[in-house]
Length: 148
Image 1 (cartoon, rainbow, N blue to C red):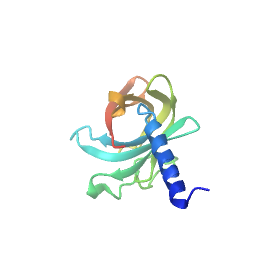
Image 2: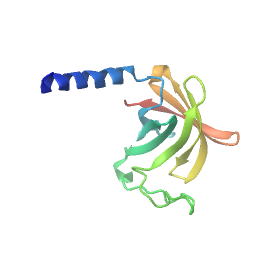
Image 3: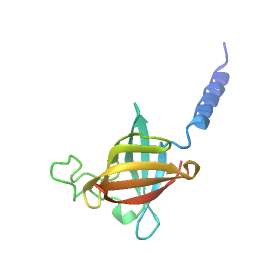
Image 4: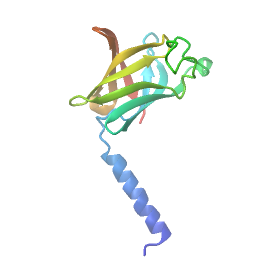
């Protein structure tokens, strides 16, 4: 039977190998959102996948003055109304929709409380993603930068 330290090394190597095999063109990971006006990092959003469905949660707000931000503008029937933005799931329901493209979900802008159709395209060898939020044919695209 392998020693405890040998089993630890085997487990560690397996974990490192699985991380190395992670698809760099997947949106799974942590992303810096970029402010449209200042072009500086605004928040950190972690995108996860469960059963082929992708969602994103705000992990950090960069501006120290906005740490206690709440979704005050969310619709009255939205369960996120008045809740803290940090820890809030803002991206839901995305599914793979082609090479490096994930669509079919929605994204909430906690600043204005509006929910948009979401489409994500992973670009630049997985270092950036284009987040497209739209209602009908009107919308905007942001580029997010991968942290990990």
